[in-house]
Length: 304
Image (cartoon, rainbow, N blue to C red; front, side, top):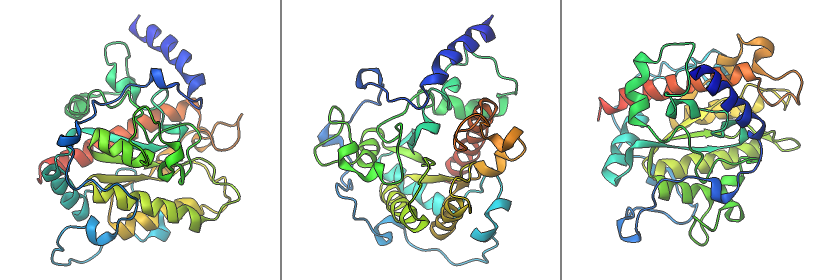
């Protein structure tokens, strides 16, 4: 009976995956009073790696796969030294160890992505959640939430654009990215801007993605980059760009492309535009991101 209720619930939600959500339907983390805001809050998007990084450690042999080999990268990334430093830095800055944010497009909205983990009472899974329950409980309330930086139609430039910020929740001159990190103060930030960047260059995509990564790092949060299942650009240049930045900044990359390969049509909906993923892929997308969040959080909390 619970599964039937959940299926009906999901069928209602799925058509709205790429539709704009009205303001009064959005639920948010409780904003902090101005006097409680972290003193290191940066209002403008002009950060540098010098401010984003913590003191260096003794170099060790780099055994990572090169960005050009991104298709061979694991679905679930290892905990990097930079991630450890950022996690510790974020806790000192007052970030919420029970919160994660999304900087993302419509394929990451709560109506189709992750929401079920906040509703275990109405949904039965075809796989065991036993090993993930500690993580689900730790981040309870953030799976069924979009926030200010995940919206329909977002491209890599959108989170950096003040005009995209909701004035009901954001301060004057804030971008969606600044607004979301101020409100939520997360320890992790999923960056998954897969919206087709047609007629634009990978270099321009990199320019915007780099700014997003650096700002997230400056706020003491761990960026989790994600490859995309599609190849609308024709040469996988966007996924290569994402891998290059993950490698350069030494931050985790969730290889969603690799996770989607065993699925029918490699996870792409054959009846749509070559970009949107299939219903089967939605379930796998949520499951593999939960695996990533679980692995990173457990590895980082135990090292802090």
